[in-house]
Amino acid sequence: MTDKTPPASPPPPGPDGAPPRPSLPRIALVGANGYGLHHRRNLEPRRRRGEIAFVGMCDTAEVHEDEQAPVGDIPVFDDYRKLLDETDPDVVIIATPPPTHLPIASDAMRRGSDVYLEKPPVANLEEYRRLYEVMTETGRNVQVGFQALGSHAFNALRDAIEAGRLGRVEAVGVAGSWRRPDSYYRRSPWAGKREANGVLIADGALANPFAHASQEAIALAGDWPLAGPIELERLRTRERIEVDDTAVWRGTNLNGVRITVAVTVCGDRKLEGDVYVRGTEGEAWFEYPTDRLLLPGETEPKQYGRTDLLDNLLAHRQRGVGLISGLRRAKTFTGVLETVLNDPIPRLVDAASLERVEDDTVTVLKGADQAVEDAARQGRLFSELGLSWA
Ligand SMILES: NC(=O)c1ccc[n+]([C@@H]2O[C@H](COP(=O)([O-])OP(=O)(O)OC[C@H]3O[C@@H](n4cnc5c(N)ncnc54)[C@H](O)[C@@H]3O)[C@@H](O)[C@H]2O)c1
Image (cartoon, rainbow, N blue to C red; front, top):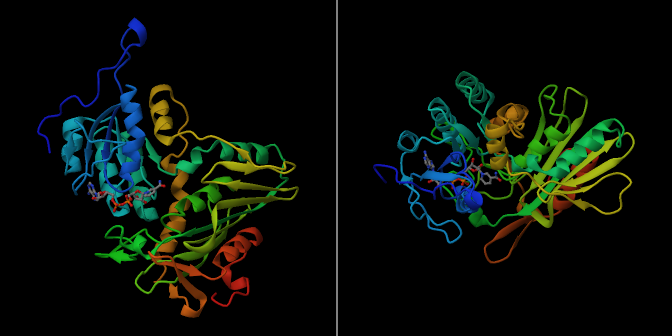
């Protein structure tokens, strides 16, 4: 803890005798361990290049040192209100557990900061409404940390759809198959929990690691709201958790596009996050975590780059560049998340369908990798695929 903020970054360098740059954007981080460490590593090179001032970070736990992102002379706080009062940030990055997002983001905007808010921004549509209200009242910006929306492959795919290369889009499906060891559910106090102190917790394969899969699908299907409720099937393979580790949801948007998102963290074969966009004239394949895209008529996937969402937020503030992942874009996702979180504790899969592998035990659900691919490609729920465990 510090009482007064010392300068956290070098003064703005003027290239070779040029006049000094205008004042640097002042960035603060709330939630400095966990995923916050990724943000520290993202900020560090920008700070060294003299592009930003990293004015402070806050965590209720002791902040971990890191070689790539040393704490150095960056002021550290254990109360975010104190951080806001003492460092006067232009942008506050919030990487704390989801139930804390609404109060921290609201306080930051009321004190005049823009916000980079980790996904999921909030857990339900009522919280979304309240956050949106603060955003419009204060005139501040909220960039939501759905970083895959910054993919240039995403833009190329939308361009191809708009140019008619797929014909009329009928379906978007996403398949994700990862592996997580049992220790993954001990990574933080809220891991694997459905609820704590009466608050629903956004963990589980759909709500947490594969939140991006749902947001990508909704956005690629045209950013339309869904027409009616979603169909949802959630399963768990571990007795000790209360959330899904294998799940599928399906819905149709107001533009008539069917969306199916099928994911597992109990997969034998890895599928990074395969998006299939099927139109009347052709199908595109897009691996959203890696920015690879295969359009109809092409034989090899092309590798694309990505715009970092913090850079985009800063460009938005400085030059009015459009915000890629503004809060409004996360509204449909938030409705899906609300349904997922309100679903009861998922059914436990029979042990006969499971294999325990590796030292740090990984649970593999037999056939889950193929099931998520089939569900995504065919627009089916697990129960429609003739699987013994579904
Ligand atoms: N964009 C992505 O790909 C991605 C990846 C992982 C996590 N996330 C998101 O990042 C957020 C944090 O996830 P995590 O797994 O790092 O969680 P975590 O439980 O590890 O918490 C992160 C840090 O926040 C601190 N913290 C908790 N409450 C706080 C408070 N009130 N004030 C200050 N610090 C506080 C904790 O001590 C911890 O160090 C979540 O919203 C999560 O969904 C995003």
